Image (cartoon, rainbow over all chains, first blue to last red; front, side, top):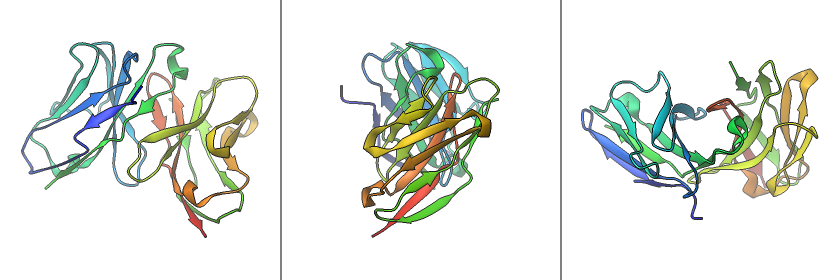
Length: 116
Length: 110
């Protein structure tokens, strides 16, 4: 068990460009979550998957954001036409479907996005 | 909706002193509550969690937390702080997703 991994760790892009982040969850976990964390704030929920199904999306997830988990393993988060307000740390977490809301989520190190 | 409030944005303690980080939750039923720690360059790490049962919960790194329904609180404590405890601490409650507090930044003075 190598934990949750995220790539890249840092991404600098120019406004208007598209970016894609990858998350590899703990192998036996069937739930995968994306969060966004801005400076001085706690992480905010964006979306989550159970296997390959995207079950919930936050209103924070505008139509420029899209997330996929095509085979129920790794996930990608794409931001199109990036804006400076998208600059943040993007966190991925995974959990097993055992007890529902009591499941512990295990977090990756995050991808820090800077939009110039 | 579920939520947690961390009243203290920043706390400074001396190494070896005791620590208490405050967390208040807002939820009608018994909530699920967690404390996570985030160190610079590190991912969020679970310290402890409470679902039901014994209201005093022991966690890793010598941390403990006490669930008090009468005060709607889940405060994190450590009897003797180490310099390596300097980090950001988040109180979390959950439904289908995690709801994070705004965090408390801990500085440890040698």
